[in-house]
Image 1 (tube, rainbow, N blue to C red):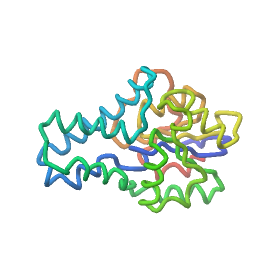
Image 2: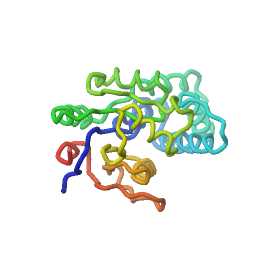
Image 3: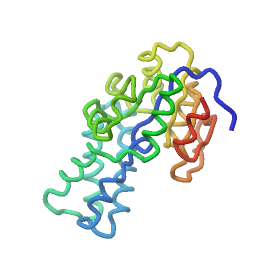
Image 4: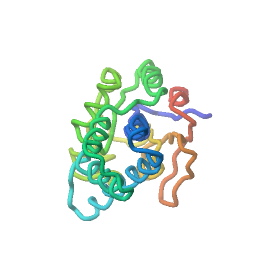
Length: 225
């Protein structure tokens, strides 16, 4: 696979790319029951939908609030009413498992003297908790939250935030990495060089922007830069 030329920094999506958003439901599957996987997928779907809808409505709330609203929807939709379960699931979201390929990849990227950053919908406190829980805090130069601009991805203001914080003027100098098709494509349309991680066997969406590279997992990234 051909290298990406001129990369000066690698910027990563967090949820679904570095961190496994379905880990909380798996850990509590015995308590939740056989629909745990289905509930987790609906939770994630609503979490993303609410970020987009709030951005369009101009009614921002941080990702912790949105994540809670989405979980409430998913639990209610499946008739799950066990006392205390909602709080337990939310607490686990602060300690999401990092995918096994995340730490080795970050070390390999840093070994190439690349700057690294997270650019995420997550609130600062959520991101800090996840990064520290996974032991990755020393592997990032910046952990950037959409709270700095008050709107969610895929707003161009979010991708521009990364350039501002990294003090990079030309968008193609950023290698953006995401496992979310819509995020990868929006970043590509913005002008970043994009590597999409095909964790879930998804096709590109029918929206503007195409990733420059498709990789099976994060272990393939270092060879591209």
